[in-house]
Image (cartoon, rainbow, N blue to C red; front, side, top):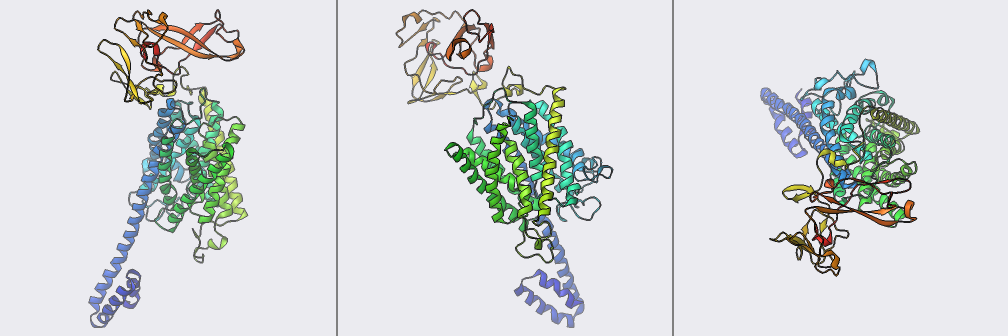
Length: 622
């Protein structure tokens, strides 16, 4: 008995310590058996501590990975906000933030059971929502087994609560990804309703079918970290939503803040190590390989996307580097823990080329996917899932007991035409299902709720807040521009109430100048009498213009070819009761332009909605 127990000594201690230990134990076995058995008990208890250490390391690893994936959703919010118009940045960030609250609650009560619980009525497509209501089937100490098996979700050392919490982060970010397609459309209330239903009818069933031991898992389809479950569902839903909503009213594809895009990219890339590496559920070689593959795929996709952008436009840029890296991360996600690093590089290069080309495909079919969600995530996730069938390890890796040392994830998947066909079928069915359900949901919602923001105001105004503001008269007002230039200067109000441009020192001001430069001439000042003194102007006719307590606003716009045969500048002046501090305080003006020929075509009226506010150089910048 004693000799057999020495196995544990050899297992637990290094060679040098093991030799000394065995040499001291051997004589004791012959001279004093009770003392020897006492030491054996200590050695056996050491194995329990070792198992506890292994379990603790798995738990610590997964807690960190859970936090990393949690960080990805705010990173996505910043990434999308930087890509959209400034007037819609808050709404865009709110859509991702709303998912963090709403989806978490739905996940806790019903969606987790639908994704990982026993089949509803014996179905292999969706779980029973009541099977794990409020995490009732989970424990903070014990793992949760797949229904009808002894196989634990994640790993044998992963408590059910932690597994559910980690999976919650995937459920949160998936609908948030789709929000990029609806920039400047679909107000926050409608979006909240949409994702609340979508996570139940789209995400949960596909999570069950792929990760919850459902139909496609039984068929042999694999998805390491969400190429199908996350990216295909969100990407193809985004395409369908964009198609159902139609084009934006204010279509502007110029990113308003490249630094925000870079910050969002950094947070997403950082969190993706928990997204892909954490899907190994243990700090082992698979986790390391998945992390290495994620880095390589992102880097190679970044370069190939940048080259495609240069080939298309003749320029490199920071934005192509950011978007390309995200495409690479999305594409490697389903294969990160199944392929070798050299295959990851190839997948990254393919992602940069294919996803970039699909942006032009979306434009060609006239789908206004505002932030290219379908091209990056829908196509990228599907592409990686399909390439997995070609690029996984060979069949010799399928037998875990005899698998060669080079195998990434022995006993899981191997490359073959059969596996490729299975992966392709799952991607195609998922794309059709996700897109079809999402399109139908938008069509139905159009008949029930108001989807679009009020066209009379900017998108963020429905939230009652804007992303950019500064203090004017003690109130936060939109910062429309910065008045500075040359050696710098600022407007100052003198003791008599007049205002003058003072050179030296820049100051942010709540109005926008046409070219962000200081005035080329010394501007006039508004004198205490309320009349204009056009200092520096040779036009004597302006010297006696009284304001009479009113503010004069001049509406200026570009006339169209309908009335003049070519473009020209048109203007109309009106008085306001008070000084406007933001564009929102300028009224939308509907005036009769038929008599002056300023209305287009046969129309008799012109609707003027201010989009920018400029200083009046003849009234001291007022």
